[in-house]
Image (cartoon, rainbow, N blue to C red; front, side, top):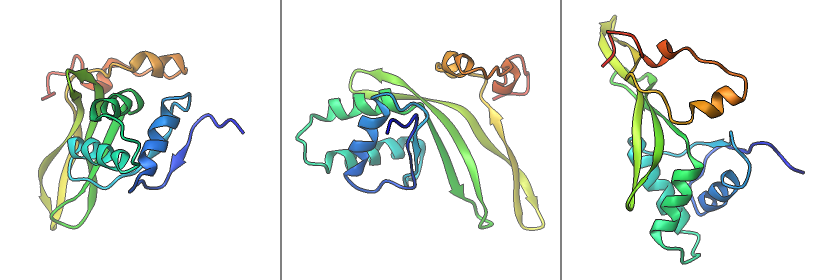
Length: 155
C-alpha cells in the first residue's frame, strides 16, 4: 500500500509526529485537523503533540519537520452568532532561525450583522503562496486576482 496522501480526522496526541513524518516522506496533500486558537497556536500545539511521542528530539528538529510538512493552516472560528467560518488561510513559509514563519494569504473581514448573523467575507492579502509552483505543476492554474494581486481593494 502506497497512498498518495493521508487524511486523519484529528490529531491530539503523539500521533502528530507520525503524521509529520508521513507528510515529509512523499505524502503531499495529506491533511488533518487540530484544535487551536489561531494559525500560530496550531503549530505550537502540533509541536507539543509531537514532543509527546517521547523520541527526545530537539525542539528545532520538530519545528523543521513542521515547517517542511505543512503548507497551509486553514483556521476556522466560532463567531459571536454561533456560526463557524474560516477566518484565516495562512501559509507556513519556512523558518528564520528557530522560528517557523507564517504568511496570511486570506483573512476574514467582518462587514456587519444581518438579522443577528455575522456578515463578511474572506479577503485576499495580496500575497501569493510560495508553493504556487506545486499547485501549477499539478495542473491547477489560479489567476493572480484570486490572491488579490492587481486588486486595489485588498488589505
